Image 1 (cartoon, one colour):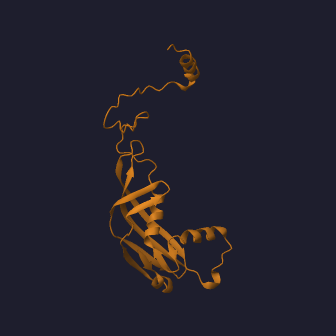
Image 2 (spheres, rainbow, N blue to C red):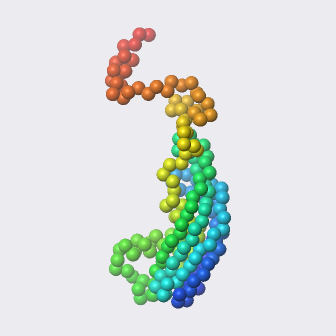
Length: 182
């Protein structure tokens, strides 16, 4: 959803709320494509602070379908996102900045800002990536998948030999395998 923020950029101390309806049906990244299972409209609070900066605040809940890190079963993963951004309002004379950190911040804004147009989906996408969980499990005692046959160990016991040899003894195991009788 694209929002026109020109009214907030041009009016001193203007403030208001905009209701946002997300258009995204999936989150695509280098990790894969994750369908959005649940999204609800939310409100963005916009404030022009003395014509120097535009403050954007909002909270929303999104539920994504993410595979379990151990067994690859799809898990409904709720994310609570807090949006809190401050955008500088520049005059045309102040457009060039001497501070490299400010230039990096402005490049980050270019991802979801195009002039006075705010792309709410790109803004939320960045917040989703920031709030992404470190580990997603279908349950705390998830047993994962078998390293040999690929069976889901939560659903069935595959019968494969699960003994893991001590890596310090690998050289001895190679000697025994070499002189094994046929």
